[in-house]
Amino acid sequence: MSPEKITVRDGRLEIPDQPVIPFIEGDGIGPDITRASMHVWNAAVEKLYGGRRKIHWKETYAGEKAFEKTGSYLPDQTIEDIREYVVAIKGPLTTPVGGGFRSLNVSLRQILDLYACVRPVKYYRGVPSPMREPEKLDVVIYRENTEDVYAGIEWEEGTPEAKKLIGFIGKELGKKIRPDSGIGIKPISVTGSKRLARKALQHAVDHKLASVTFVHKGNIMKYTEGAFKLWGYELALDEFRDKVITETELYDQVMAEDGVTPTVKDGAFAGLRGGKPAGDPGGRVVVKDRIADQMFQQVLLRPDEYDVLATPNLNGDYLSDACAAQVGGLGIAPGANIGDYVALFEATHGTAPKYRGQDKVNPGSLLLSGVMLLEYLGWNEAAEAIKTALEKTILDRVVTYDLARQLDGVRPVKASEFAKAIAANLP
Ligand code: NAP
Figure (cartoon, rainbow, N blue to C red):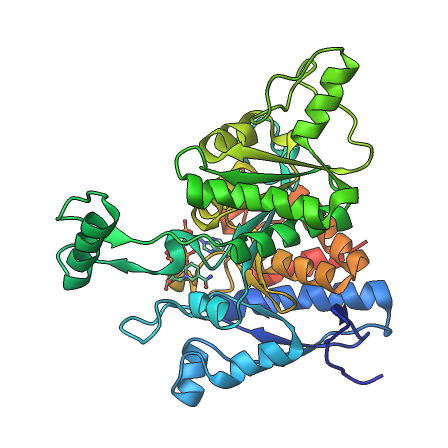
């Protein structure tokens, strides 16, 4: 069998048994973690599928290596490669100082319209965590990636643009803004919100998860964050009607069973009937919403009541790091940026330049991003095997320096040794 491209046909991905998948090695520690992770990915695919399936890795360039080769930090060819082959993975990239880009990562997301930032957060036994029961948190965060205050539409205090805008808003719209203000715009659209909600709901349906929660600050920002929530519900009821039940519907059902007339129509209902999730959703995904600040309490106090969290850009940024920290996994948390079909998986940390070339750091973040990639291909057996082997390796206390320093009496291993141990532990 020969290498083939992943294609999109009739709105679905077609995955050949021997797909070509571009990878960007990344800067700083990128080459170390890419080498280590690739060892494990290849070993898992080989072990699980024999010669039947194989990934043909195709190097494509961004960052310093691209600059050396082409004079550009983000060559057009790289964008083309990712578009053409649909699925790709990348190590961390240095943001070039004084270059034309705000950040290569942001540029990649914008050019390829990768509108959903997906961050699964799950505990691996043996990882040091600040929580008593870190395993109770097992969520996938879908964060909108293109809008909100991250759209990059802002003007510095004192500039003619800021003054003009303040004048316009005062004169034409009757809203007073202090003249010495910087101005940022927070656009949240029907389009951006609904396509994100669609992805989050589809994930819950595909993986038979119990709930999707829209996280928002709509009590204060009604027409942006509040609208994000409303459009999310709208999409859920328009496109997933037979697969979902809203929390309000469930609440009404419970109240009717208890012979009580429902009085509350919105808000946090989880925990009715003695702290247990209320009612029987009948196998449907429960669609609910939580206000962002209260969500930070929920993930600490009642983490097992949440499965998929769908968030606007800024909330999602905060929430994904907070959740990752809870399971001790900030350094090993994986991520992906996904558009309609194109998906770019990536390590969530930076290039840690001081460790460059030392074969020292934890490849876990990139490794688990590759696990997400395998799941995206539908190669779940290989993905599961890597997760099992990673957990076993950590439980054996074979870990890199970052985890070793949090464990008593453990000598760290190199990134490559960690990868070899994981490959050897593949079930
Ligand atoms: P960083 O590279 O993430 O490193 C910060 C610290 O996190 C490191 O010093 C190290 O902590 C720890 N760390 C990061 N990766 C690790 C790993 N694989 N294993 C173990 N520990 C790890 O953040 P930064 O120093 O702020 O940023 C450096 C560069 O990366 C910048 O150019 C930034 O623009 C870029 N960046 C890129 C991305 C991306 O490509 N997605 C994301 C963030 C930042 P200790 O010092 O405690 O050992």
